[in-house]
Length: 365
Image (cartoon, rainbow, N blue to C red; front, side):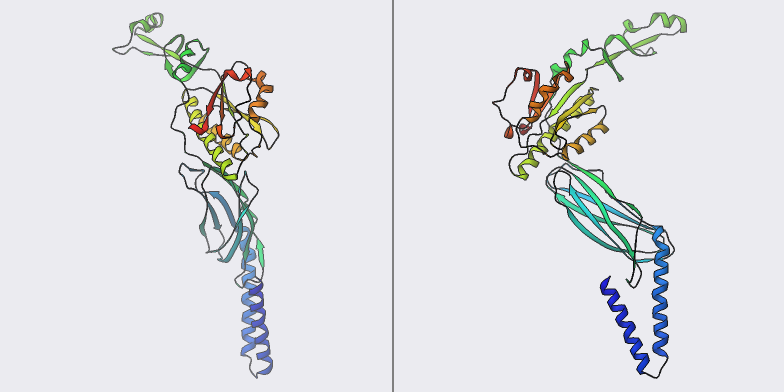
C-alpha cells in the first residue's frame, strides 16, 4: 500500500510540474481524470466493503489415515456487490493446539463483481493433530491502492481434526459379552434372544419358531403373531487414557499420542458397535484436574479426540493412573479399559486397585 501511494502521488506531482512549465491544458485534464478515477475507485470500494465476506473452513472436517497428513483449509471470498474488487488481502494463522508455535500465511487475491472464489492453503504434518485456523486482517483496497477498508463479514476461525490410522486389532474379548445375559439393559435397535424382554411383535412367517407365537394376541386378531425378543447390552464402562507421555522429544510425544488415539478409536468403534455407552477420562495437564466425557454415538468420539490433541501432556509417568485412585468411587463397579504406552510407563508402580483394570499397551497396537 505504501508503494502504491508513493507511485500515485509521484505521478500526480510530475503532471502538476508538467502543467506549470508547459503552455498546455492537457496535463490539467489528465490530472482531473487521474484524481476523479481515484475518488471513484475509493467510493466504489467503500460501497462494496459491506457486501464482501470471507469464510475460512477445512476442506474436510477430518483428515489423516496415512503417514503423511495434510490439513487443507479453504478461504471462501464472496463479492455480492456490482463492483469488482482489485485487491483483497488477509492473513491466516495456523496453530497445532498442543503447541505454542504459529504458522502464518498471507493471501492476496481479487474478486470480480458477483463472484465467489476459493483460495486453498495446505499445512502438512506427519502426526495426528487438532489444527486451528484463524483469519486476521481481512481488508480490501481501492484500485490505486490508496486506502483500505476492513472486511466485517468474516468467519474468524475453524478447526481441523487429523486422526491417526485406526488400529486393526480387536480389544474386546468374546468373554466380555458372555455375561450380557444377566444385563438389565437392552438394545433399542437390535433384536436378540433374551425372552425376559420383548423387542417387537410381528406377523408370523413360515419358518418362525412356534414357541415365539403370542397366542393371546393371535386369538384376538385371528392371525398368528410372533414375539421378537430383545438383545441385552452391557452397562457403561470407562476408557481411561494415560496423558503422562510428555517426556522425551516432541516427535516421541506425538508418536505416543498417535498410538493411544489409534487404539482408542478402534476400542470406541467396537464398544459403540455393541451398543455399549462409555465414559472417557484422563488427567488434564491443561486444567490440572481429572476430566471426563460421555460417549453414546460415533459423533461423540470426535470432540474427545479434539480435546485430547489439545492437551499439554505432563512429563510425569502414570499420572492418570495415579490420579484415578481418587476417582475410583465414581467408577463404581464398571469395567475400566486403561490405555497406556509402555515406552513411558513406570512398571514399578502397582496398586491392588489397578488389578481390575484392563491394561492395553498402545505401543503394541
